[in-house]
Length: 125
Image (tube, one colour):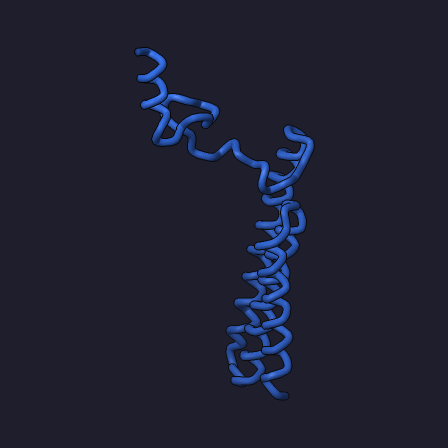
């Protein structure tokens, strides 16, 4: 077996997944793109395991661990997405600002920039 075929396929899968993570705004599509990237890694692990003729089949064993971790990640990720969708009505990743850091004086983050104390001093004078 030539190693180039699965390596090129894995590179294409990883590239599509990376594009999906960087370009998509829907959280479900981002999670699906992460799964594509993990499957590309799994394909590489199995291909190199077969190519090196490893007697312990470490690549295939590691692939099973990656599949288990990916299943746990998608379960927790979907639970978070469903809770966000119930609370907000949208699963748009760009609109999630609940965990963003805000300024010390403004809990909503409005006017928390460097000019906020100057504006307050001018308003008091």
